[in-house]
Image: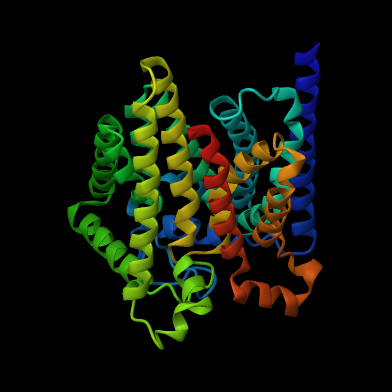
Length: 409
């Protein structure tokens, strides 16, 4: 009976989300706003690749629509590039919509299994809706722009599950493919090294090498090398100077604007690099603390703790990435696993700790409350320029670390 009730509730979530996405698609088309500018970049760049035209260093669609991914990613989009643009973006829209539904369900099950298995699964269905509500503004932007973050996050969570299920080769290969789309996920590789996940690390490198060779084979040596050279130039240009102070949602920017600007009148990237190294050091301390705790356990409990700790460290790094890179707001979808982790934690805290509850609500509002139509242009612009999204993400990270600590005590 419980399984039937659980199935009905999960189907309810799926149907509600499916109806939302269909209505989203219809309304966007009715209002002539079904633009999907980011997908237009992938689509047009892939068409240029197929026809032998220039791919990099030119705008597709909007002035800012420069293709920044690897030549290998062009091959992934090639099947859609042979279709008319409207049908290609329609297929892509519903593909991403389906993946988002799967992703939210999959993360809920993953967090429940490895962190909060003591909570009855039938009591967690509200978490599906609350996590969706908190992240809905970013889901909206992901679909409206036709970006790829939901697909990459799904691949990354599947990779994590493969790795902790002793299928490291498959998990590592998937991560290598993800890195070919967005190289800042190399931030995960030191964790694999420090956690002795050498099989995964090896296949990450194999995937990157394979994904580099394939476009060269397809397009010819000369053009293939030129494509990769242009990709490197584009990436370097996108991150010139590594100064993140102007990217308002990053940790370096928030620290500089709220504190360091009173000491440093100007920055040249050194401040940003220093802050990133500090963040990396804090994550390393988390890992060292976890490993010390694991050594105090017996062999059976140590294996469970290692899987749990590695998973949490992995999710923390994912959530940190948009806070230490120059990127768009929809990339903060990478924090969905930690948001769901916090929601699970809130389900079991005592009333005496209600300060934590209200702080979590505030963090969720900062993270996902910037609805332009709700706040109005002026207030919404101020929220964006103040970097409150980034601040909310930092609070979510800090609270997740606090919520995780009782499991290590």
